[in-house]
Image (cartoon, rainbow, N blue to C red; front, side, top):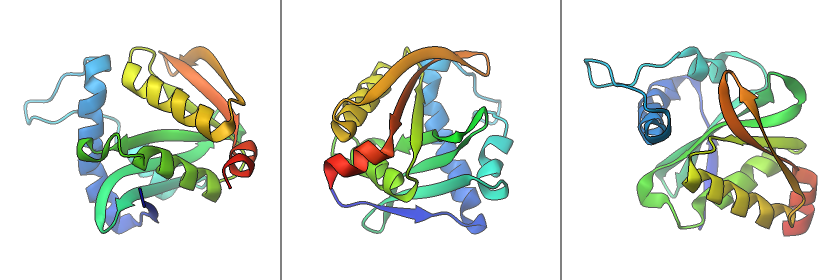
Length: 170
């Protein structure tokens, strides 16, 4: 599957805000978030705004040809600036199970070499499976998994280095 990471600009923020609603919809299966009277998920918009306003934050559209297939929000982890964190990652349903997510992660790792982490909700078994399988394939199994708290929510953390990833897949 051929993909491209397209860096977002300030002008792309409204599109990302719309896509973020779809991301929150997917996550609501696990987080049980209610929707507002207007039919939207309410969230702290600073989560998204940070990717356009703060250093070390990199928002990307994941493109399949000329079509937006999802997004990857990459940042320096606020609790360990030496670690790169996949803040949020989303693939639209029609593009899932085609290798696009793995290709998008590999492209992110190539753009941002270093020590990485991905955080996953333990109950999100689909994401757990995707991330575990994808990272294991890209790192030849050289990753570590742990559980811990992230802002009051129990998460599974997967830590790995893009250096081993890039050398094993090139």
